[in-house]
Image (cartoon, rainbow, N blue to C red; front, side, top):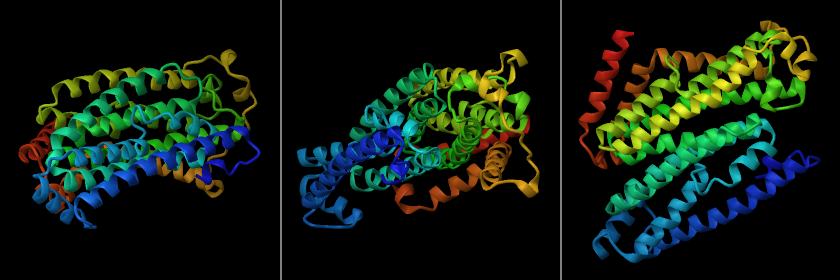
Length: 378
């Protein structure tokens, strides 16, 4: 909360910090109330396994109090992952906060939120699996549709990436809802590559803002002619977020959608495919703005762009981080199969996840075999 408002002379930063603090404190209170209900229903147990056991013994795993606790806990988790309708803080905080802070929030809070969801829902609410899957299905549908549709109308890069992150949360929820080895493995894989894709994109926004003082999409016009390397890096990150092959984002979405399809989530997967196509439009719009524009169509900030020297000896940490993120995004696409296999092995070796698999565990083997076949064709 403090980091979002450390630019205290900027009114937008102060507004973002206040909104984030108020909404975050409210969501944390709701989440803690749900945990207190779990604590009471279990008779004062503090470990998740013991809580699940006591609740099952006391009420067969189904009671009004447990359902209320589930709703409150999911509300707190949904705030952390920016799921609709708990996303109201995201666009304003992303736009008003310092960009390095936004880059951290967009990845760190989302990964922590999904880890928390798996840890709590799979263990403590195993008796209400159908109920929490239904709730997350609704959240995924709303997040994918609203996130991608509203992103089309954004004029600020940071606000566009904010709504993009909302939509990305909807995609990841498909793996959580699937509840299979393949679903959890695809979540781990996608969150890993999302780290590099999103950090790379935000690093490009930081570098451009430092040199021009703006983050408006229209001001990126003609950037390729002044800074081709920054243009290339931003294009790779955006196209990977959109799921363009052979970048990492394409394989991440393939794994998520295939895991959902194997689990019988046909409607959700089809909606994910449609909204993913929609997302490609607003990502490519930025790439087109940077690459296709003629010299006479160059924006004023780009015309006054300072000379850039990308020599290794003079590289700043931001530039080094950007290069590493782009390399990781590119290599993760080429090495998607071994990376996914590692993610799958980590899931199958985790007792909590492996014992809670809902559908056939063979789905993970099928997805690896299909990826081997696809990689061979490439």
